[in-house]
Amino acid sequence: MATTERPADDAAGGMRNNTSPVPNIFPPPESMRPTLVGEHYSVVAGHPLVAMIAADVLDRGGTAIDAGVAAGLASNVIQADMCNLGGVAPILVRQAGSDQVWSISGVGTWSGSVTLEAYLERYGGDMPLGAPCSIVPAAADAWLSALSRFGTWSFADAAAPAIRYAREGFVLDRRTALAYELMGATFRNWESSRATYWPQGKAPREGDRLKQTDLALLLERLTAAEQGANREQALEAVRKAFYAGEVAERIVAWVSGNGGWMTLDDLAGFRNEVAPAKSYDYRGWRMFTGGTYSQAPVILQTLSVLAGFDAAALAGREDDYLHLLTEAMKLAFSDREKFYGDPNFAATTIEELLSDEHVARLRALVNPSEALPDLPTMDLPAPGGLRWGKRRDTTNFTVIDAKGNAFSCSASDTIDGNPIVPGLGIMVSPRGVQSRLDAGHPAALGPGRRPRLTPSPALALSLGEVEQRVMALSSSGGDVIPQGILQTFLNIVDRNMSPQQAVEAPRITCLAFPDSFFPHFHDVGRLSVESRISENTRAKLAARGHRIHPWPDYEFDASGVAVSLDLAPPSSDGRVLGSGADPRRSHYAISR
Image 1 (cartoon, rainbow, N blue to C red):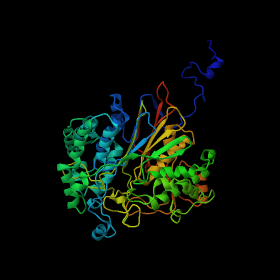
Image 2: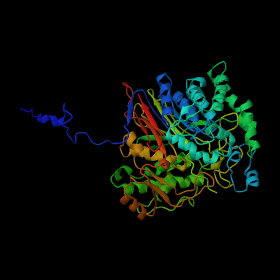
Image 3: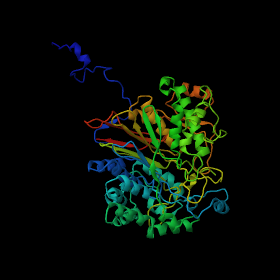
Image 4: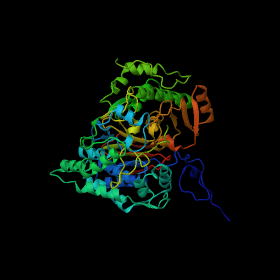
């Protein structure tokens, strides 16, 4: 029987049947997940349902800011294991066509009625769980500030998905069910929390439906209050419905009745700071973060040190690159411990810490062959003159739309930090645990002061282009948050990785500084390294003096990063947007 010979050029392409594959035409996959590409928007969120809610807002004509607020409110319901309407929500916003990025601080203050002396007198050197570490809730005002200043939607429209999921419930996936089981070790002792999250008296399981009726009622109450002569007045009425009246009275009664400090004036007078973001230029990009009320400027300071070295030239020399990165982060975190605190009270500004003089002083400390000790800047002159369990209670999301509006947020505070306030369905931010009980510390507890916040979203704009590219980055993971953002950004800018490659790449975590959470444990010299980094590289880092702690290949505590960005300069033909979602957590990307 005659056979047909395959044409010689078949090996280069063309049609072929299943029995005659041509090997080695396509390379192996560059990442576990593809980099999603779209023209209309990029959304990345810490939960698939939240990503779908943001995408739906964009499909219905909303902007990235509208979508970001809807995602935030939905996260407060769907990811109650990670964030809360009574918690924190720092935000960065870029409006289309602008080279300015705005920061919404998203963190509350200590009561004006508390002093460090009074706190120490009542609790000694301890900071008990519950009301004693409670500060003014900031997330509700953060969502409203973003909508009022930069958005177009009403609160009712933005909150509708959150209300639906709170009232009707949603089915728990395996990871979220496990979170409620683990966090229950704490909240099972709080009746109001146990009734909400363990309604059957035991931890929920995958496939169970979680309903939050009191939270739905609160959101519906806020929606009903949205009345006014114009949009701005209507949103202000929503704010007053939360920060004054019965809701505020319940919050104050709970905090003050359980050993904390809170007054009605604290709530009525609270506004998140909305201000131009801080920035530093690095290799054709201007990186923006919040100020020193958070740890976000660690990102800027690390980049300022790295800018004095050719990190891109270290390709193929992984030990040299990771050593340089670790030392730069170590210097920045050392300055965090020495200088960062609420800028309304702190003596040193981030502008001084990014000055040429100070940056040169830091760069001079880097030794290519030997690791610095922990906190190496504590003795440098100023420029210009009881452990809790691990807390990784943050979620995050990024959104960019077709016009170039961008939204980046890291929302936090969770149900094992404080009990649910009866009848409200929310807890009161326990973020006071990130203040210090030391009067000499820049992040010391004090009346009207903000704790030094760990959640730290970022945005970057390209330089030297007619139409700027936009990159939105956010992360979760406590002290690891800026480290996840930094490594993802550097993987894209210096190492030419795709967005998905950049978030999946092996990660390190420098822990050569005190933990931000009380009691601020310090694991001296520790450098955690995902095991996909070779044993040879780890050995070379150890030889330089790093105390290596191996992690699994993909470690949950190595942070969960979301990145949305323009893959090319925007043009009259539109945008090409890419998305990267971290597989270490439940992050999910949608591009269209």
